[in-house]
Each structure stands twice: as structure tokens, then as C-alpha cells.
Image (tube, rainbow, N blue to C red; front, side):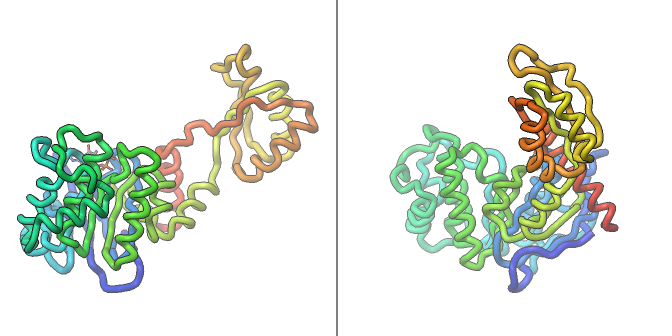
Length: 326
Ligand SMILES: Nc1ncnc2c1ncn2[C@@H]1O[C@H](COP(=O)(O)OP(=O)(O)OP(=O)(O)O)[C@@H](O)[C@H]1O
């Protein structure tokens, strides 16, 4: 399976036929893609293989099969490429007994930056941490430590950036700032790969999205297209309120739902009666529901998707991807 991602410009990262296994666990299976300058999102549920992709690109591990190239070099064997590559790992990556500036300068020095202190200062300013630059990282919040990791990845002005779930642990204000930062890094012509399990996050940051399910690349394209793929699919919806069984009967008659069952776990005293319906057309159902409810004299207290987590989205995507011959 192969995919191209990123904007125009030369290919900066190439992954060809890569598989990676740990004992009996297949973490990645025959994955191929190319990244060009701009932001590419790597979307997948927990355990899908995102961190494995990033660790192969970072040179921390090598593929069991296939080939990885970053700026034309093998990141596992070629030290020079690491001066052009920045990585924000998923886990902890800071030294608590050092200040933010020392943390960043230390890595900048290792990467051959001429004035590591100045570079650290500039990187910390870019991530909005100038005010805390000379405080020990041990006393920082998770969000602040996350920013130190970002500054560490940026201080040597890398052409390629790998960011593993960089918004984890951030509050909404910090998230917005970091979304803007990631976008600006892409706009500067850097090649940025950013992983997430949240489609909404990826949509805001990336020009292109790669979707990985159970170690396989199952879809790639612009965020809007990926969103369509996820929206236009069968859904299970739970309706609760007064007269919802009658309402569901009408929806069934109209063909807006294909099955109806009572929800045994309903809490009648809190929400009235409840049913679970299957719909092949969630958007049409959403539009028609209030109209039919009014016609039937039903009162809806709750309308909520069931099992509408990333697992089910990805299960559907996998099936859809198989359907188009991927
Ligand atoms: N060092 C390892 N040893 C054994 N199994 C591993 C190792 N690293 C990853 N795996 C397995 O490979 C699969 C992919 O893991 P990976 O960490 O890449 O997923 P992920 O998409 O990054 O998930 P998360 O969002 O939870 O970090 C999982 O089944 C995981 O348990």
C-alpha cells in the first residue's frame, strides 16, 4: 500500500514497504508513504502504530522489513541527518533538575548549533516559555514540559519535524497556540509529521492526513475528505425521551433507520424511554428527527451516537478501504 502526502516540493521522508514486528506483534505491515514540505497528520487509534512510525523515522528503531529515508539518509545509521531532524517523543523527554533553557541548549549543543544558549532562548520564545526559561523543569506542569520538548525539537531549526501527540496534556488555550505553531512550521517549508488519535486536532493542523489502522495505512488525503469518509457511514444512535418508540416506528417507515431496539439500560426516571436505532444516513436522520418528533408528539431528551469512538470509525474505514481495493 502506498500514499503520497504533504504539499508540493521535494520528498523529504520516504517510507517504502515497511513492516515492523515485536515478537508475535505486528506493529506495522507493509506501509509506504512519502512526505513533502507542509504538515501531514498521522491519525490512528491507540496501538495503531503511530509511535512505531515515528520511532522508525527518528532512527530509534529499524524496520523489520522495508526502507526508511529521511532527507535521503537512513536515520538509524546516519548521525548527520539528526542535525536536520527534530523529534517530540510521546513520553517524557526532559531533565527535571535542569532549567528549560539548559534542557533545550543541551540538545542544541549535541546537534552542533553554534550558539546553543541563544538558540534555546529563541526556541523557548517561539513556544511561549520565555517567562519560565530559567526555572527548573521539575516544577513545570505537563503542558509546560510538553512545550520544553517542542523547543528542544525546534532549537536547531530542523527541516523535518516529527511530533508524537504534541497536544496531549495541554489546556484549550495552549492547544490553540500549538495548533498555530505547528501550522506556521509547515508554512515555513518544513516537513512536519504530527500524530494524533483525534480527527478534529489533525484537521486543524494538517494539509494531508494518513490514517493507520492496526499497523496498516488505510486511507490518505485532505482532512475534509477523511472527515467525509468518517461521516458518511452507518451509525448507531440512541434516542431517549417521551414517545421515542413511536417516533422510531415512523423513522423506520420512512427508511431513515433500518432497525430499532429498546435500550434495556435506559433510566426511565431520568430520561424517559430509550431506543437504539441503526441508520444508514446519519445526516438525513439528524435533519429529519426534530420534524418527525414534532409530528408524533414525541419529546427528545437525548440523541447520542453509540460506539461512535475511533475504533468503530476506523473499523468502518478499514472496510471502506478494502472496498476500494486498497
Ligand atoms: N517495544 C515494543 N515491544 C512490543 N510491542 C510493541 C513495542 N512497541 C510497540 N509495540 C506494539 O506495536 C503496536 C503499535 O504500537 P504503537 O505504540 O506504535 O501505537 P500507537 O498508535 O502509537 O499507539 P498509542 O497512541 O497508544 O501510543 C501495539 O500493538 C504495541 O503494543
